[in-house]
Each structure stands twice: as C-alpha cells, then as structure tokens.
Length: 172
Image (cartoon, helix red, strand yellow):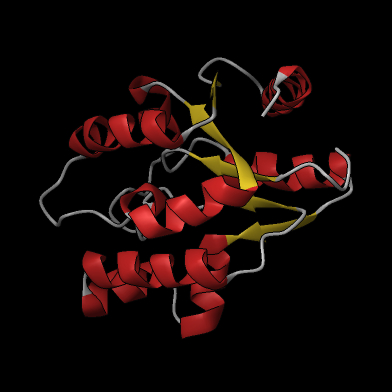
C-alpha cells in the first residue's frame, strides 16, 4: 500500500474477525489501527454493554456514528463495530476515503464463535435474535463492501492472506 492508496475499513458481523484481522493487517502494511468499538468505550468511559443496558441500542448506534464521523482514518486500518452499516453518513465518509472490506462469515460459524450474544454489547433490538440480526445486516454489508471475502472456513492467517490478496488484485 502506497501513500496514495486509501485506508482500509473492515465491516461484518460480531465474531467475523474484524479486530483480530485488522490488527494483523495494519502490522503487515505498516499502518496505524483503529477499533471503533474501543474508541466508543474510551470516549464515553463505558463498555458497549453498559451503554446498551443504560441507554439502549439506538444510543450505542448514535455513539458509533459520532466516532465514524470524527475519527482520523487517513492511512489506517479501521475495524468497525458490526452496526456501523446502520449509519449512512458514517459509511459514506468511510467509503469516500477507504476501501471497505466485508468479512463474511456464515451464520452457523458465527453462532459457534459468538457465545456471549446477550452480554457482548451488540447494538440490536432487545428481542432480536442473532439469526434475525444476521439477516437484517447482510444486505447492508453487501451494499457498503467494496470487496467481500468469505472467511467462514478460513483460519485467521488464511483470512489475512485473502484480504491482502484481494487488496493487491483490487483496482479500488
């Protein structure tokens, strides 16, 4: 990646590996790394679950949008929260200056990975199941992703290599 190339933004469901792959990708490319979930927690001094418990999932989405619109993302790898795609303004800003990569993971694999669905701080309606959330967000991830990578059956290193290969092959 050269100075003229865009930043890289990772989107996908909770458990897709955005944070893990993002850190490794940033290291591989010599870029800074931002995890917007951590930015939210640091800025508001609460965990994501505390925010949803105290103020509701829509407040968490609002905080996420504020972070998406204000973080300096130039020449960085950005791991977004799974609900970033609900913010049209935030995603428009990210897409304007970054290549957005959708890390797809199948529902059965995500259900095995995400064992703390009710305590993870996921921005969702209180009655919404993981399966319903997966279905609802799928279209949004497809809409915003410049590149989609199926990581369902890939190890972390294989997923990292797939992202690097897709970036090399991409003219974005």
